[in-house]
Image 1 (cartoon, rainbow, N blue to C red):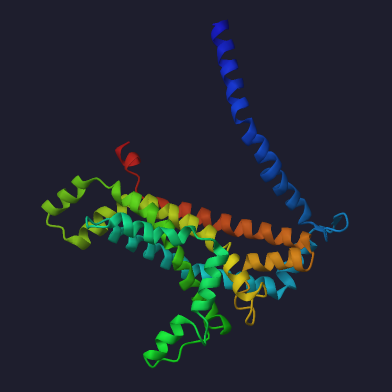
Image 2: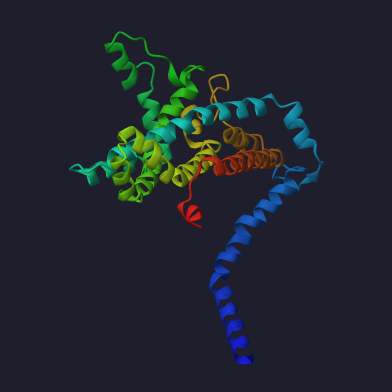
Length: 302
């Protein structure tokens, strides 16, 4: 018994030694900065002088006196409400097409996935040219059809929709995940559905969607997190200004402005923690709703 206990302790010690680099890195580069940012959110801190405790002043100003906070949150919510469902549907649609047994599937899968791994700055510069109201490809094509194209990034009404369209460029990342989910659906379920007389739509609704619902759930959660952290595209296209008329002033872009343009790091930390709470709340809502539409085969068997 004593020898067994010694071996268990030694095994536990070896395990902690193996994971100690990760623990140290987590404490130094994640948990530590998060704790300090929480403290800084209650301070007036310009990064040039020591933080000065001001209590809830930053939060009070944010919710009562800062119209840019409300504007940036509204822009981000609008973008998320448009980009998230469109991205889910587009990624799933591409995955369904690439799950068919046709020639050249490997080539097409690579073609659809490659844009998702391209550098964000390069992609933003490309789409800035595509959406150029005078010489951009899209407006030139619309002109050939007799349609006067919008100003896109120069028009407050079209700036966010343009960024939503641009976000579909990265649909390949979600497509790969959906494709893995589709290929894990047991073929015998489709065969049983066909025997029962189910058509293509019925098989998709009654077999495919329930079986890949955990995959949809994962992509929805990741989509919420990603859509609330839009920064690179808006920063590159507008030069960090959020123009025109604050129509592209995304929340993280405004946070960046406060931190590094105005040196209000304490206020920026408060913005970051409010964003954290918003994303956490939306994620918990999705987790709560998941029990009504996410199907886990293992749980059903249990």
